[in-house]
Length: 463
Image 1 (cartoon, rainbow, N blue to C red):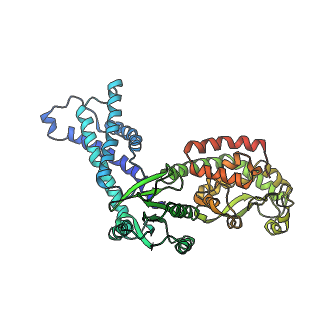
Image 2: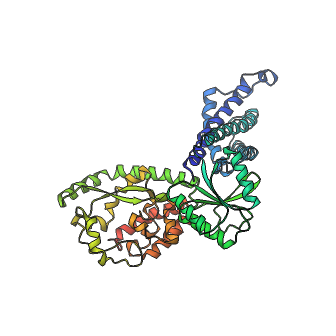
Image 3: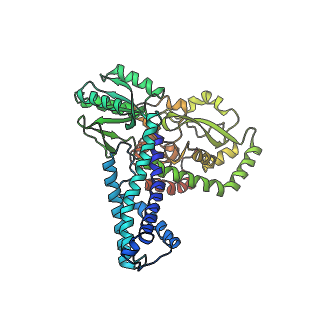
């Protein structure tokens, strides 16, 4: 999912809030500053500043109602009539909350005209704000900014109708970079090369003549190569709840999300990451300084190490950790490979690793060598919860479903870490991390974070 889609969807929140305030002001001036005061004398009078304070609170209450009305779903191709219907639904839900509050408490204000006028103007203003945001987004599409680079598979009427529509309407947010008529080894090889060079974002399959097995193969291929996948609605039935239906030129296209994190999940998770990591670094600062001094006295070398890892979409980054090994420890790894205690996968594990320093052994037992990971969290390279960070040479050995581990950011902690830590086999660890990717929720992250300290305190299987 393009970052620009998340940004524009997030911008709808402050835009809606400002438009709700503007609607409230419009209703106020309509009631108190126009000819209506002559037609219907003012009985309930309220000052502008007091009114603005109430309007600011009411607008905040309405935003969750908008979310419940699915006004913040990540969808750039929603028609204006659909957008308007969502706005009416969201404002109506907000109106119900306010009316119930007035009915039971009698504490807001007694002007029924303002309540009704605010409701009607809110529909107009909020819809106008969304039209502005969508037009800005679509004008950027015309400049190829934030556009989805699209690969289409199919040699059927459905495929050609879709291609013609997307070529005509660049403001839809899709740009066709390749069309494969056949779904075979050659086309998949070309697609793999495009994924390797980051020249495609999404694959749309639009040919009902292809067999289910072929399409399933394409879907698995896209998952392994970190490409979004969509299909024409009559091609196959989705086997997952993580789907979204979009109308493209009259063709219903079903988009299968790689993870529930696609969309608002990423925004919620990112906000949680920044808040928690910042707080953790501030609180732990004295401990971090003390560990730095101990590491410096214990052995030669830097306090921190910056390890090359692969994150979301196989992008490289430098992982910050306290140095727990002797200097140039990576050069000794090949010599020690015969002592690797993990035979079932690409990871290297060795309990009595001679490269580990005295203070390093203590830090690893309690996992405090990973505290600088919070720096990576703030940079956006790590999340608080996710799969283990991946070493490039290990990723090169991943096969099949294991490549899906790169569909989300790795984490400081995760399902595997709280379920056995390094004592798990690689197959078990992969299964747990894939379960997390497919079933992410905010509360699952909270549960994992709460369980992590207890696992660390036990020190179970840490190496």
